[in-house]
Length: 224
Image 1 (cartoon, helix red, strand yellow):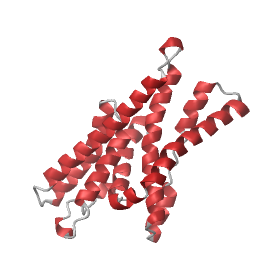
Image 2 (cartoon, one colour):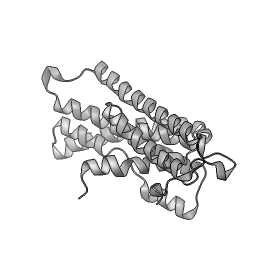
Image 3 (cartoon, helix red, strand yellow):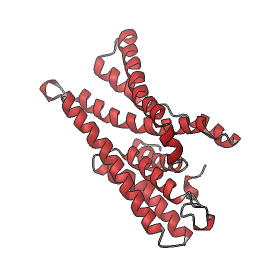
């Protein structure tokens, strides 16, 4: 049976990690502005429009409408990305779609946690704007820090061995470990896994010598 915990803790981390591994930082930095705008402002606008529609046309209360709007605000272009891979499409279009989908997943996950806490609170217990901003920064910054730390540790350990099985194991540990460690620390597990994948992909996958490429296998469990 597919439960929330199974999907969130078992299926999601390797999917995010595998996608982040293939993104080159040099190309991402060039298109960082549109990616950030789409994955942040785009998610917020989508959530607001959906919430407003639920309130106006279905007469939903504001709190559940906002929660629902944030819940479905993140787009997941799995079919489009699968088509890109099957047809060998690369370049800026694929980078924009793939990068934006990764970051908007993280943004939406953080926003959903904050909005859900706001909706469940009542009266004077509702968090202020300042408190929400602090929590957002805490979850986002903490998740990225955990991901970078786990990714750097995996790269350092993998560089000490040429055994591909050990390297693949470290990749799996980094994918799941960064996610679970961040979640248990009240950070964003999604952003942690994406950060770990970006770091390991750019430090480990770009080796010109394929035999020394510490992530050349890309972990068979992460492949389609």
